[in-house]
Image (cartoon, rainbow, N blue to C red; front, side, top):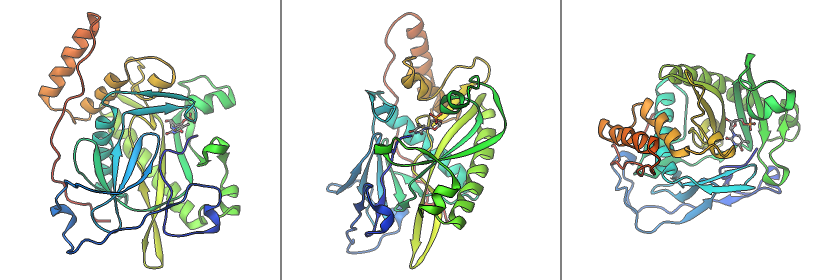
Length: 317
Ligand code: TMP
């Protein structure tokens, strides 16, 4: 498993040894302006970190960060690299939608609001160095590890943890390792498992409603500090980059496996997910239909549609 987002820390801790440590110094604005009324155009800003699929910039207020979604795609611990033109725009929209919906059902998340086509404002958290993978159907590494045919329903939902460390190739770890090495406390792991199941229940239903099977997905969590008190909230992104999404009728893959497995049609698959979730206007969908038509005739598809940023309020957490 691969580290896809930054570890943001305010200072040294024994647990940060050997991993990327970013000191996210924050600039103070002369006057505090409510987040939902801030000017989103920022002329000068500091880059905090560049990951494989995102860049993080200092946000406009202390405790905020801007996530910029790139078109870059990597797989197999960045051994395979490429660009999926328009992916960043689609992932920004899809992740905004999913995080907003999860916020509405009471899952605390880092998401504040989308700023523009490729950027969203999020709360700054200390990323817990665990990738949480939730699986409903055997695919990918679990199918390989246990010799299960891809597509086999698992007898129950399985949660796995991977330690985020590129140099170790993100090894699979158990609760015991997490507790023993102090990557997260028992209470935090309890909250994480609880939220992962709730996210799975919600997302499986949401995708089933638009004819998509939620096979598996990866989540990341972070600590939000309030004085000495820290609470765990959902962080990073939820998009076809970190999910397996199969069309229920055809079995077509609508996710990053198209890139991992050289299947082609990556951006069309991501667009299809966005379209089914109702995130593309009728006009934009018409462009996509035209793309399908052009593709069928062997022509290259048009680029991803553009749109303006909505004025969503930050969810209360
Ligand atoms: P896996 O079957 O390769 O372990 O992947 C399980 C899920 O986690 C799949 O939906 C893709 C996602 N994932 C990531 O988001 N990042 C990663 O680095 C890997 C390996 C998988």
